[in-house]
Image (cartoon, rainbow, N blue to C red; front, side):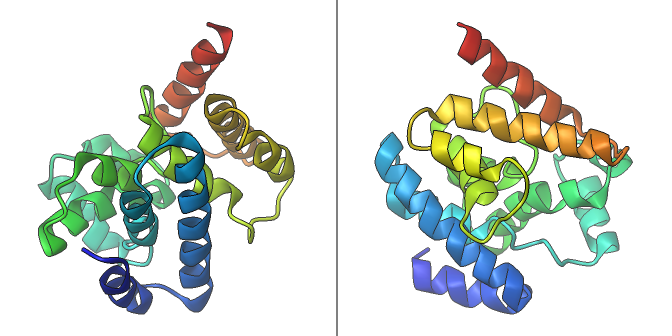
Length: 188
């Protein structure tokens, strides 16, 4: 699938604000792809598709989770973590996207996980640091992004967990696994 085709598919599924976010994530991801030697074309496609399921009805996402290979325990957590895994299934079923890097990057862009590959890390990071984001800690992650991908992704994991803890929100286990994975990489 080419960039323009993906944009035509995604734009009607998103709000104007979310579509603008998507384009910024794609631009940021392409910049990071150049720094970390991954395919710019594939990264751009994954970034454009990453939020495709964001506004699907909750019952529809619930059914995707129940009827696919996705872990049913997703349903025990806030629906904000559903859209990435659901989108990874939908892009395969509806558009024939079978590339495991693209599907993995879409699936884990919100939570991360242990053993994220460089391609997945680029999307995970780009979604967090795109220029439209403004929240405590994002500038420090932006500064780290071109210097050390693992460190920047650890910061994303740490900041996300701290934020969710401050809200007394449940945290999907993959987020803890990502944090621990990156911490181990940093500590050798």
